[in-house]
Amino acid sequence: MLHKKRCIFFLCLIAFSTLFAEGPRRKKLELPGADSPLTKKYRDNYLTDAGRKWLREVLYNSAPYRPYIRAQLKKRRLPMILQYLPIVESDYKVHAVSKSGAAGMWQFMENSMSPYLKKNYWYDERFDPWKETDAALSKLADNYKMFGDWSFALAAYNMGAGAISRTIKEHQGKTYWNLAENGDIRSQTAMYVPKLLAVADIIENAEYYGLIDIGAIDKIIEGKAPEQYSYLRITGKISLSEIAAATGIDLETLIFLNPALLHECTPSKETYRLRLPYGSAKKAAEDLKRR
Image (cartoon, rainbow, N blue to C red; front, side, top):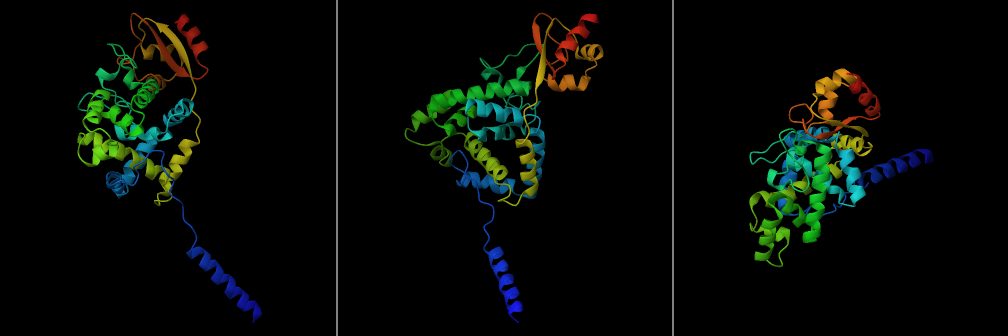
């Protein structure tokens, strides 16, 4: 009888502990505004079935590039939340081009490339995700130095530093959230930071929101080290197919590693730094000399 009572006691204790067990805690984001009505609107949208499917797709898109972005953010001591900005900008699509002409994963406009990126007949560095990442992080860091506030730095990335400066001057003392919620900045910029926060909140708190698959995908990406590459300086025009034939490096690999090349060949009258699989540059140089 005593044994039976003990069993009942322990079963009740287990049931009580399970009932009141604390679930996953919601991690606080680096930037304010995660619980604003604007952020909630997008978070609710991204938590629908269609939104979850989209998040899975963009996480897969981000896998080749986020380890590099994360490493650069740590190196530069910038907020890690910025790793999600290409989701808002382009769904992490390297060749994305908007109706307004913004291009690449980080969506640089042609008139905002200088001094960060170069473009000519032969190449457009906006389509190089590694170079465009360096450019975007430099631009965001410059914006933060200018405004001293990450929400305004992000708004400036979206609508231009000059435009956001004029808006701040017209509405002195107002925060980004005051301006966004009162309709004092253009709608695209008012949506920009809330979208970033909504995406970041869901991914970083995937278990809290019951999205086990998204959390698992994200952990795999976070655990990866950045890929290493070798580089070979090539002077004059040579097609990637010729390089592939001479070196034995897969053509698709060369195209993937050098997406800025607009015609799948190096420029005719300058030296181009070609990205290659790690450890292959020396042999490739020898192979090309013999071709």
